[in-house]
Amino acid sequence: MVRWYHLIMTAYGFWLPNDPRGSWSDFVGAWELYKFGPATTTNEKRSLAHDPHDIQRRLAAKRALKYPPVRLDDAQRQCIADGFGIAISEGGYHVPACCIGHDHAHS
Image (cartoon, rainbow, N blue to C red):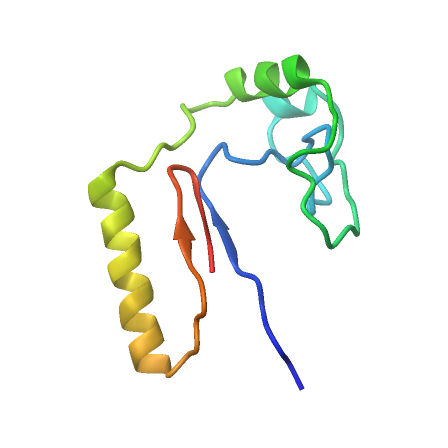
């Protein structure tokens, strides 16, 4: 019996495939990013967000992105919330918590 799922939806530039804290990616698809190292695959189930890491390296890789990282404004975040609401209603899902940030969402 499944007790819960943790859905994380990210926007472009939020967590790179070669983030020094680890990622759940198995390849880096852009040369601009691969220069900062290969994918940092991990099997961790816990959050890696607060792990110690080379912050300057991570930020340099983000500056090398082809496009600027996505930052969702209030209207876009409301659109995502409305979409979640429709999906929850139509699918009959039980969602005890949801957080929609400026560059990713958790549900």
